[in-house]
Image (cartoon, rainbow, N blue to C red; front, side):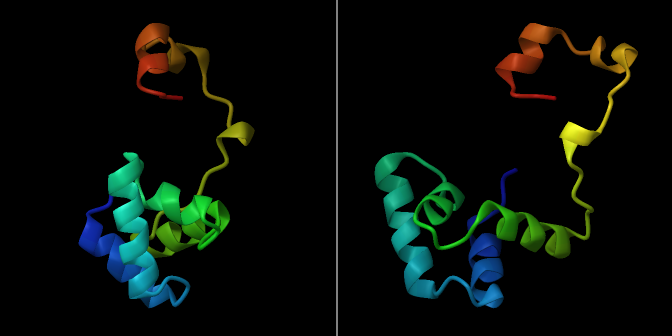
Length: 91
């Protein structure tokens, strides 16, 4: 999921878990390493994946779904060619 940088910064700062300084440091590291700011924040331990999930769920008002517990009908899976799904990291 792509979140515009300013929106991400606002979300992180409003949460109180990431300061402006933390965010700017993560942004610089992301630029140097070619990773996303979120990956840097998670990798550094500033936030957890679970916390990020909760934050995004509340921000976008979209429920979290554990795809490990969802059975997708075969006829739906067959609509997307396997090679394409793998190349796009689709379900």
